[in-house]
Amino acid sequence: MFEKSTYINRRKKLCESFNEGILLFVGNDESSMNYANNAYPFRQDSTFLYFFGFHHTPGLVAVIDPVENREIIFGDEATIDTIIWTGPQPTLKEQADTVGVYDVRPLSDLKTFLSNAATQGRTVHYLPPYRPEHILKLSEWLGIAPSSVDAKKSVEFIKAVVNLRNYKTAEEVAEIDRAASVSYQMHVAGMRAAKEGMKEYEVMSIIHQTALENGCTLSFPIYCTTHGETLHNQNYSFTLRKEDMLLIDAGAELPSGYCGDISSTIPVSGKFTGRQRTINNILAEAHRNAVLALKPGIPFRDLYYLASKIIVEGMKSIGLMKGDAMEAVMAGAHALFFPCGLGHMIGMDVHDMENLGEIWVGYDGKPKSTQFGLKSLRLARPLEPGFVLTVEPGIYFIPTLIDMWAAEKRFSEFVNYDEVLKWKDFGGIRNEEDYLITNDGYRLLGDPNEKAQLMSLYN
Image (tube, rainbow, N blue to C red; front, top):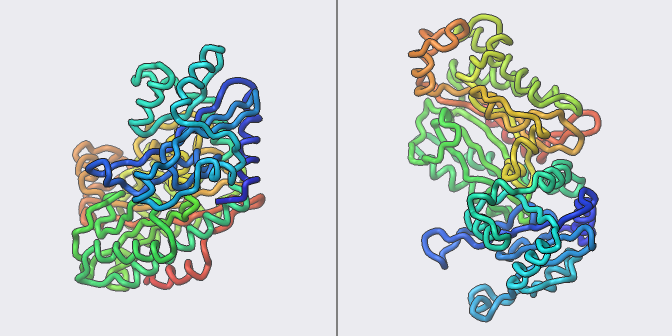
């Protein structure tokens, strides 16, 4: 946790955006895997964590009244039936004191509190619920149908939270820096261990172990695969072959909740084949140019177009594409090989605040494209100092997509399908790093020595 003053100042800044209403924060509950007492590891709601802390306490709700300058935590103290399983816990009052909240009430008081606010004609602002139980709770507390809960979310509240959390402070950057460093260690350990004949899950276990050894959890499920053409492959059953490339996408989450997100791809044999090196070099050029262009004021969408253009030019150089590269990109033909985005915001969530809506986090309220490929771009807005984001171009040969487009002769003015069909068994390759936008450019996050160790494994 940060100092008490950090949480107090965050809430104070949030209140500056409101001159009416009540702000309602719904903390997360325990989530059961297959029966009530067998729960997934608890993870607090990130916005609740950002403003109130309470990393380890489920079932809480908080209220801020900007007009009357009140902050209240609603929750129930642990009973002896809980304590015998968990051990002694700080009281809610003790926890609230550490973040500067001095009014703690039983959860049973919440519904009456909200009902009184409604009677007074006050707006209850809440964020989009992303767990089913939150929908049901909001329905009960506010007296609205479950089907109406999402529609009544507060856009004003969403924008106010986004406009705080998008700009990382020095203490937040230090946390993400540490998370990126551990993430690099995870990749180095996995890549060094990977050998012909191993199962993907054996490599994955080493990556996970490294996170645990650093006091971290995972910021998302590990992707460790010789089938990189499946963008988020969670099948770990394949055996590593000498001719394979191994794609790893993995990140650490610190106890504070801040995340790292790194991707890397290496040859299992220790040396790229000719075709693999060709594609890796194209990808590296797209990645390098996108990174060099990072600076305040440039729309991230422009960097996506830049990386896509370089990928098309690379595909033209080996006979897989043709025509004007930028025309191909604007038409969407590049998405045959690059059907995803170039990167995303990162912070307390690996896709930061995705639950609040990419339209606000990554687009500042501007509409998203519906074009295949481009529609998957999570970040498009002009970059600003304090943004922390990933850069992660990839090149993928997806057999189903290739077959579909070839049958339709889609973008045949740009794609040489006779040649592309010869590459259907190539797989996929992706590389990813985390960056802070500074006043005059960018800074790579993570220990440079850890990054250098990872790069030394590429051949």
